[in-house]
Image (cartoon, rainbow, N blue to C red):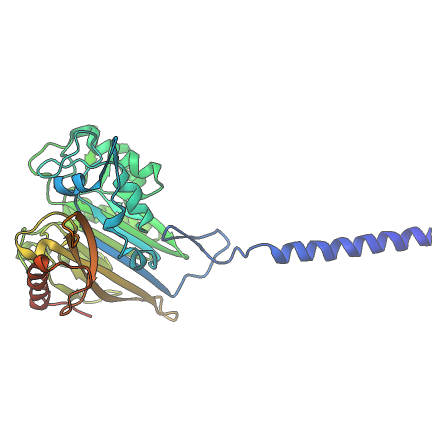
Length: 382
């Protein structure tokens, strides 16, 4: 009997040792996993990250020549070359967002004035590192009800998050405010547009337009859902104007009063100023960039439409107060349209204010110089 007891004890001890070894080999659940640029936070993670890095891109458009350049025959389209050089900057972000100013509205694929792009564009944007595409802009209804709905269907199938347009009004509450948990921090993302080019919003689908009463309700709901930081992407302003108009500035102030941390503008197709808004008694300063300009398109006139910027926002939390500080940085981009042999390419290049990057052909240098002059003429806060 004593021998049996010793044997049981030895088996029990060996079992405990084996279990300890197995548990030590399992991955820790305390850290968020990064998948395609978005941090997926496990339920066990309780402490909020002190620093979050966000990246924003401006208008993603596909004009006819871009679609033709991506055509590989037999109904296949490859937009991969467009994003190869900027992909590392997008992938480094905890969360990367952009405005999708086209639809996946089916064939025939076309650009301006009624956009519909091959759905393979969505796959390439995901591969490039984007996590969220906002879908409220003046081209949301270009392909009617099917265009609104299929755009969401395609992005859902890719696992990308969207807000700004919806299949039905009932679906809106599931997508706005869009709450994304990034390393323990709850970010609220909302998107609105000034209009849809006079096209009716095809019922029962819905596109969010700028309505301060509705926006106020949405922001209050974001607070009730525990949002730590609120972001509004807004399609507004006048095309090709380098500075924001009075209406943009008034709207930005109204959003700041509701505690929005960052206001990200689009639509003018050129980069506009950025600024700080600090309301009395506010918990944080509001960062606003009135337009990120085009990210990618075939626009050429004025020359400042040949690109825009990737905006990085570093969100820093003060542990003692929980207050968030927003630190912006800017990376300009330029669309190369032709290779040195004259073939169409539509490749985004990171560019500085002065130098010409390798690969830009002499015929395109004048447009890049004009863009660089534009960048120097606007006011960007740091």
